[in-house]
Image (cartoon, rainbow, N blue to C red):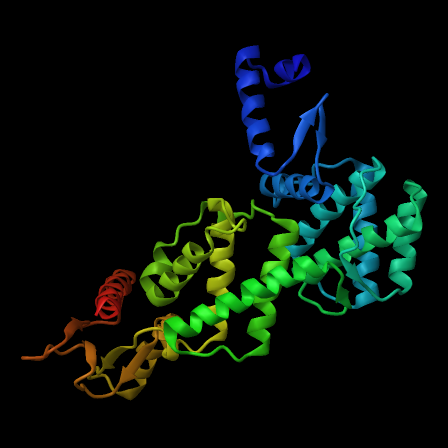
Amino acid sequence: MKKQVSLLHSSQTSSYVKFRHLKSLLNEENILIKKSRIIGNELSVRSIFFSTYYELFNGIENPFPKEIRQMTDRIIKQFSSQYIVTIPRTKEIKLAIFISVWFIRIKNKHFIQETYVDYVKNDFTKWLKKAINSDSSIDDEQIENEIGYFLMFCHFEIDNEQFVTKFMTFDLYQEAVKLTQKFISMFFDTFSYEIRDDFIEKELTNIHIKWLVYRFKNQSFIIKGKFNYFQETNPAIDKFIQDFFREIEKSTFFQSNSEKNKLYYDYLFLLVTQLPMEEIETPLNICIDFSHGNNYNSYIKMMLQSLQSMNLIFEAKISNNTKLFLSDCAMDKLNCEQLIWKKPPTSNDWKELGELLVQLKEAAFER
């Protein structure tokens, strides 16, 4: 503590307050600090380190020693070559921080004890085994567990099924499957829409397995994000996810707000991109009818395509279902909202349209 007081340039009282706060945060993860050492389940300890370093340093710099950075670069290069994968820059940064924490823990003889996955042995895993052993002598079973731990992370983050052949943690896998089945069942009860897509079911299970294994909480905007935009544009999906959280809040899963924030986005992006929104969200009919002709109408429609998750239905003529009339000519006695653009729309015009669509969407959802 004396060293920390000096490094932080703070009073001893202030440092002890911070230290007690740190201990309470770690206690939530069943992690203790004893004699300046962090004690707890190795998986949880690594998750805390990775989450913290990734939140603080991604996109800024690699904070680890030169020899660790060099080893990380070699592992990523060998990995990409073996599996013939192109890793996006953002995921490469995440992978580099993960590998650095992983390798330092192994160097200091803090090992994973569980066998999480099975994987195919190949030139890369042989090379990786030698690389780990050359720096830290560990037995074969521990090396198998560590390589499996690394490839499991790659399975989730790089979305490639060639890394892992089978999940060995049966109880954990069963918990993930139960959560997925509950999610799908509740979705059907809410929308009378049955999710039969194997891809969606598999992705939901992956979301749950990944969370139950790693519990990475600090993920850039996920922690700080607000749901207002999605509550406005996808109110039915938003309400379902919030209801699902309330349904499982009595379980031991997803207790903290940061956990729910991360999962909220995982669920929402999967559902919005993979499901037909016309089956889920209340439709909003818009009649686009400008005097400039069909090409101009098509241009306005094309500009609105990015809002398709709102389930917009475009009409060439006004109907009983029309909720918004968008034109350069005002009409008398219309039973819908009108928005008149006499000139090509400016950024303020688009903003006004967006706000009006949100109001109409909320009114339709409430009905």
